[in-house]
Length: 278
Image 1 (cartoon, one colour):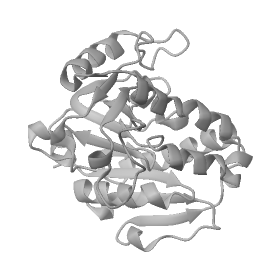
Image 2 (cartoon, helix red, strand yellow):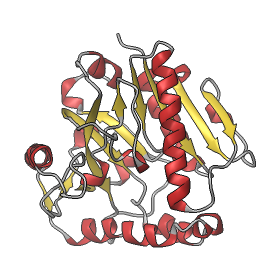
Image 3 (tube, one colour):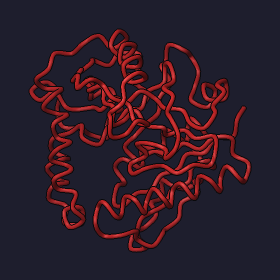
Image 4 (tube, one colour):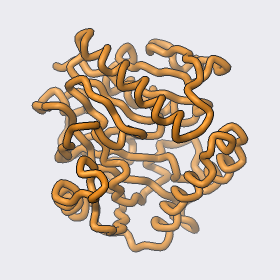
């Protein structure tokens, strides 16, 4: 089996981080999780016990500069982990979960250990929303996937999150500078950052985020809820298969190492087989 680490950086995000630790801890082992808190004014929560969690001096105050600094920091730490004996490093935000299709009957470590990876591997991105009028406010009393059933197939979240060689991630892990991406079969990145209207409204009122320039970004991402509410849900297996082909072949002219989707806005309903994973 390969040695696989997962890394992330967070600020005031215990809601997602607790789920992140629970999921990746079960998939990879807690001692292979590396969590960096952006700001020494934070407190490492008790649920991080058994992981490598540390406070770090805050990286920037404005979203663009801070994001570049954050990914530079995470890229450097991923390189150190690879140099110190890890075969793979997974870099994701705390609201992102790389999931193997349950129909395969293997966990994430088993799946990745069976694949030959050159520089990086991408999972197909699915951006979850809330179907207003059908799905209630999210709670921590049940798995996310028991409460949310619809997602947009999103190129923003088809990221080269899994690396086997030292490299430099672009902002948000969206690309690797100087390298192409390769989308794996039966592997998904589930993004839950904008899957609840009430949480989004609360985040719009978060002074810390607004002062860093996140307001317009969050408003733009709220469109996912609009899409999952208004668009018809398509068949998951059929459209994820089509999406892998399109995203492999199509690239935006401004970034040839990112996937494109021909401006298609496809919402799918997540099969029941995923319901208890996250």
